[in-house]
Length: 103
Length: 293
Image (tube, rainbow over all chains, first blue to last red; front, top):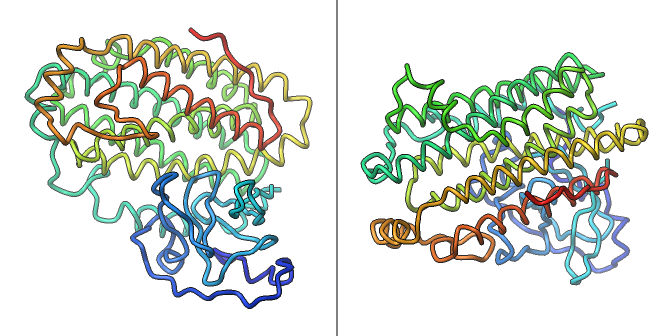
């Protein structure tokens, strides 16, 4: 199988922000719906009361939270391995980040 | 081409599904888990559980027929291989929900008659609309009907049922969580495959929109029938008292134990329709509102 589960590394230049990105150590959260080595990059979403971190974005297709080892920024590209969907990260109307699907 | 499937393989499916969330399970739940007592001993709860499980079996039989039928209609090898794994997912769903009927005390010899007795006629019509497209080997309409409309509905219904059973019936909640994980792949395939195909075949949009409107109508009629047959307020009060705190669950911000069945029906229908509109809109299909049954 090819392809990384999170593709934010592709898009460092797409951020347009100069401050260094925060780094995150990802731990397993019990998400077991993708092959073992990719599991730490995903977690289950608990609904609207479940806030997303600066390194997280919600997959609008299958409602899984995609996690990166680095802070996500507008223009980053991410991949949801649980439903095979590719996204670009955009600014949501509430100021947070949201995923826009790339068919 | 289905580029989004370039990372997909049978190996990926094996590592995610049988060797992932289904590892160590038995008919989708932990070995030894049983239907809790009130669902077997209380005649009203048992009957309700059988009725709702029959609808799941009917829906999954339709999904099995559709996904297997679409393999030979698929225009590319990657989609054929993906649909082969979905076919096995759907066959597993038929099996685990059928097993639940046996666990609830339905004798194997009575299975088909129990399904015939309880199958909602509107759900059967919903399935017929989809299977007519599959029989004609109409891949685009078949995938929209199966992986966006049917699976989109199943995704929401399973999530609601999972919330309702999490405290009161861990065995069934575990069974449902595996099916929800499967649905993620199914809805993902639907949106990603159709997103590109509909751009190549814009002439198919009106027919697909009609199919979606018809399927949505029969889905809403199924929900209406199911909630119309809800127990009386007196019966519901008795069940609430029997289940205690375990029966008090929240879904979409509402306490399901304290609201009227008609409110749950409206909440479910609105949640599913909202998802349809979003999913169809993303792939370039305009959602068509059906007449409310």
